[in-house]
Length: 426
Length: 100
Image 1 (cartoon, rainbow over the protein chains, first blue to last red):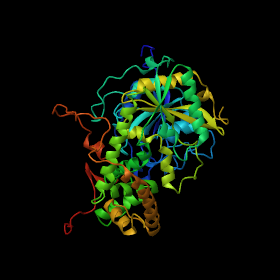
Image 2: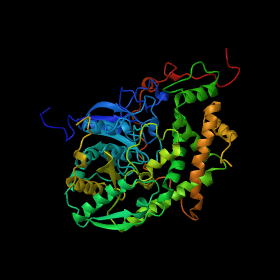
Image 3: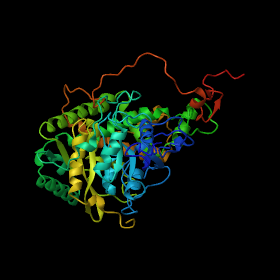
Image 4: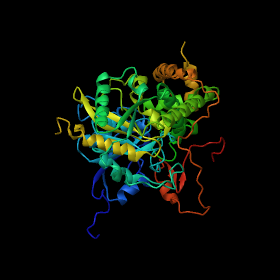
């Protein structure tokens, strides 16, 4: 009350994904099963943002329980991309991405389990960051896949992202996977200087089948620009990359099938009318409440955890996860950050992949590996293909957020893609 | 040959407490079959002697002092229940023959 700002976020209007709980507000996860639920407590990120003076002005749409890459799987209908309303904004945090891209708020938050912050950031021409697993408390984030979920910001610039991340990061005794290390002043790392920084280009990411060559060209051109600015570029290898999606789509549904067992019509949310008995209550509540993609993942997860399939599927996927982690550990011995495309193509049309779950899953081919390995990653705008934004992904080693942000900021000081606005909004 | 049958889908649906109609069951069998075909490529990776990763960031399980801490009041904890009596959740009868 002394007329001084509480923090750099004081008075800033923000939006949060509708899977982060806030006292007295409905949290739907875009699912009918959470019908009527009003949160009795605040997520840690909500507490920290409010203490910093940020003003939550809205809750944003998502794929139901954050399962999807298009924000079409929502009980409330699809979100649209401000650059072309016939296209999806990516997902699952598509509502938060679209809100920042359309200029509705300068800062929004989402969650990233397999790319759900970075891929929509790429599709809508903004910055989106997934921090190191454990850097931001998951307390009050409705669980999807607990070993992969992480909360992060959407902004226009890496500089804003640095400020927003510092506000939400740090140890929280209510999340046993929260990392106790102190949070550095990320903004202080943004020197604009990348001379001597070694950028690794993983050859497997540029040889992916189905990637749009025009998207790869934008990424190459951004990397050349950083090289001219003094960065050293070297090829690295992440040999298990091609198995990332397969491992992810065994591990994430397995964890989801367990986490979503809690929706039983007893403690909160939807409850089927006039149940015959307890089993009938469970079956009908869940069948009425969950949408098709959520049911598909619960079934897949139940299958891979069931007797007889556990070793061949779940345990195998966890072993491959170890190999993916080691790939990154090895690669980061020879470079400071890894640069890749964020998504293999620009935003796709609404409905285009709706009947083909596997092709939707492949939208996350470049992003799931960071979740499996726990490492931080950011997507920054690096060009346009046919008028639609393209994202450059920068990955760092565990707790390497400062380096990732420094490279992203250096790139934005040398480019203007993030300053462009969707034609109908400009 | 499909990697999963409709009977297996029905069995896992029952384990997951989900009911599928005919149409859903047919579609789900095809879609999960396609996903299982795709993930089958993991079989070509040699994982002999490789430890599984459950969490990517190794942390020792943190312990706190064993002291009582304030918890959510019971009234608030049941406030979202679709059916409640006082501070109790109401569920259908679980055991037979208890109806008075």
